[in-house]
Image (cartoon, rainbow, N blue to C red; front, side):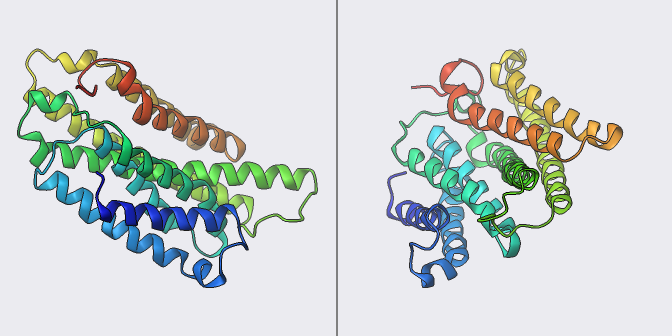
Amino acid sequence: MTTIPYILVLLAYGIVSFVHLLPGVAPRAVEERARLLVMVGATVHLFELGGLLMFGAVAPGYPEALSAASFGIAVAWLVVARDRLSSIGVFLTPLSAVMLGFALIAPRHQVAAMDADPVAPSLAAPIHLGLMVAGLAGFAVSFAVGVAYLVVRDRLKRRKLSGLPRLPALETLDRIQFRAMLFGFVFLTLGIVTGGAWAAWSLDGGSWVADPKVWFTAVIWLWYGVALQVRLVAGWRGRWGALFSIVGFTGMVFSLVALDSLVSGFHAYGP
């Protein structure tokens, strides 16, 4: 993971994070080209990560999982950080940069599932990981828009509009947050289904069923499913949808960054 292309990608994400966190400090030319920087960085990121996984240069492990999550969040930024949603990037690019930076220094641990299925690095794992990353990207957008919704709602209630970022109306934010959550839920479901099919095919005795990561992911899936259901059936919108998104995405990040290192199982990282 300590390659020059990844360092260049990290530099691109870091510069755009700086632009968001300290607006007006960076040269105007850099601010105007922030989108181009992330686009170029994400393209290089995709080729580097995809090449490693698709051509079997390395078996998927902890650094690759973090790198894939970083890429997904960067793509999420590209989708939403434009026009009146540009300020939402303050929640996404720093997280993407931090994840990639940690991936570059994280210890090289392989996922335990790779020991059970040597074919996985070239076939099953990239498909499963790609679907999960797409789901994570959707939830990242839902999280960022949810935070923005709560901030704008609070400022409006207190009538403190000075310095408020130029954002769409609350109703528009709520609609974007819902659609992003639905997108993430669909791809998380597909990721769970493909991962379960791969595990059932490659493992004897169904030992993966007792994996803590499987159960934790099922809880997250159920959490988002309930959030979508209560919105469609009970009409819980706005603040409730934002809170569901924030809590759910926090659980996703914990599952990715910490859970596999704390428990043993099918998804755990070995020596």
